[in-house]
Image 1: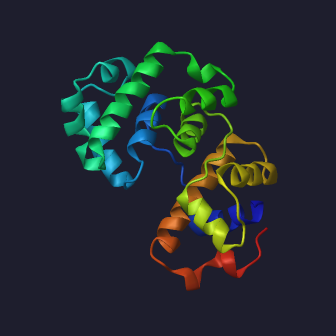
Image 2: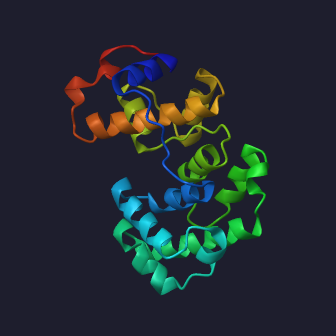
Length: 201
């Protein structure tokens, strides 16, 4: 896997992902980015900031219909507005959550309605700065094209056992996979795929 990382790094350089001013902003972004483009998430985050809602307490107490309007641009806005209020309430009631071990944070997040493995791991990695490798749709697709099959947990274990347990590395690797996925998989440039053409394992 480290060969794949080096290939992607040489192609795209350092991505310095995830863009956020605070850990809580990462949490909000992780909820909003489900099934939408990041550009739409950025619009919603600006709306929330402009309305003083980029913190757990005010977001938890926000009027639901108003919140729906602010995040409408991300799609599934009613569902996401409710999830934002729920997760904001959780973070307001658990201000020390990021001091816990990664696995504990992950399990507590997974107990929340609408928080799946990818969202939970994104929060653990990018907001809590703890090592959990994020497996997204692009990662699954690239692995499948390389003949690597497995469910979320199996692919996560493969990555985590194949590279050093290092938070900046995990962040960079995931960001590079997303960039590669957008540039190649998303545009169906399969014939140009350098990962499948060459054995990088």
